[in-house]
Image 1 (cartoon, rainbow, N blue to C red):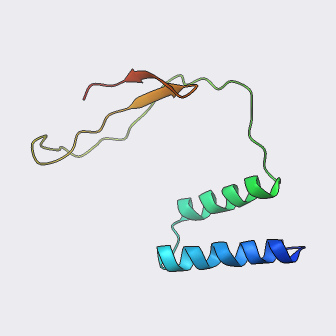
Image 2 (cartoon, rainbow, N blue to C red):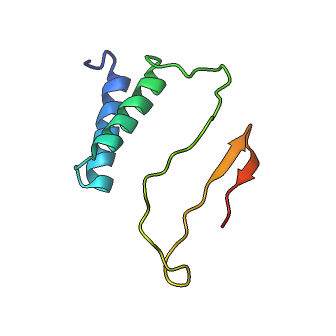
Length: 90
């Protein structure tokens, strides 16, 4: 979809330059989806769902073994209305 106003064209050019300068012009598919979705939110083509969403379960693929002293230990934090309601074991 081509920009319809000069301001939209400048915004599109600015975003493209930012991506090229900061990300080296190479976007992973998830990064491309994120920028497309964010652009759609800004333009009004995409609207957020305001109805409550429920998290029933979280599945994590098998993770590599990490040594806690030198590596990292993944954990999960869940927020509800910007308030922390759960933290998995750390």
